[in-house]
Image 1 (cartoon, rainbow, N blue to C red):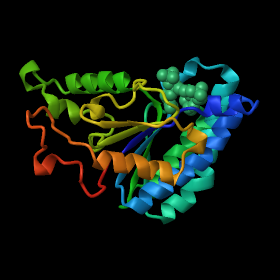
Image 2: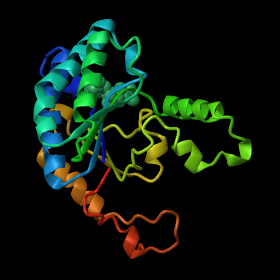
Image 3: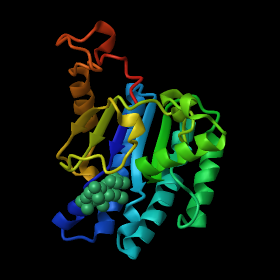
Length: 240
Ligand code: IPE
Ligand code: IPE
Ligand code: MG
């Protein structure tokens, strides 16, 4: 399962607050969503926290988001770690990502690397296209011949090759776009768009999204209107 956590700015605007207050309020939604996903037995959860395009925002907001992401780690990682979760990051951690954040990220990745519970991936300074370009570069670097390039070999060169295809994508705030998120892994994702602004998103909203997913028919290009049994989206919440 993957989430585009959107609508923080509008949440703040509606209350006459600074946009940064909306990000801050988003922490409660992160905490609630991670807990609910864990409780549902979801094995893979990926949250989009900062895109390669988000550097275009005003510098004070960007600075705030760097600090905010550190705060989320510091406030939550000990608990998530004790819940057996593996935490990791998808995206580039070199500059302009500040040292203080990179250090915390690397530490938390190391501390939770051997955990076998839910894998919580935070997409941070991530862009789906850049991930693909990097995969192509890495693959070419192996000296591979053109005829050996296929979906499998390319997938092996993505930054996180074990990240499964997305079963369910949730985007909050009523926007209906991917914004360059996990393009490769999203090929057959079921999509769920919620009008709820991210800071208001809670377990009940997640439950609604998952219920909607379970009513979908995943056809993968087949002609039947009745999905094959193994294609019904009833996978017992090993959802990504
Ligand atoms: C999502 O909320 C958080 C990030 C992109 C970091 P936004 O900040 O995009 O909120 P809106 O879309 O402006 O309301
Ligand atoms: C996508 O949201 C990125 C994150 C949620 C981190 P944006 O709010 O940045 O996306 P656009 O610009 O509206 O497409
Ligand atoms: Mg937005």
